[in-house]
Length: 125
Image (cartoon, rainbow, N blue to C red):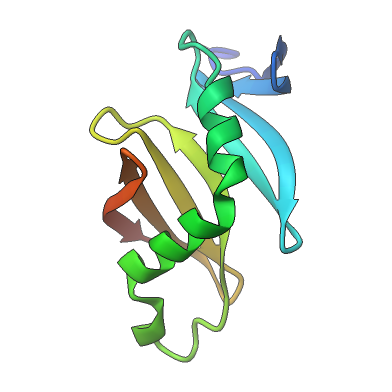
């Protein structure tokens, strides 16, 4: 049981990724000062083409996600939410864009995308 979820590093076409609990994580670029990570399930193909396409239109996807979340209506205490990761972990969406808030570190928001459109979101803390 011990060591079942040890971290390991693997080489991918996108760079070196860390695998922990069967999730691959790779830090790729900064967006407005925040490092954007990519997550996918171990054993799945590395989403090279999808990541390249998302990165090329990242500003647009962030805007779509913010509109889907309705951030204009968020409480004033949540001053800043920032994108944190692109996830290829859920079967009902092509990918998801995940956000965090510095003022509320346990909170998270995830916007799902399918065919380039925001199709819904989840949140929690």
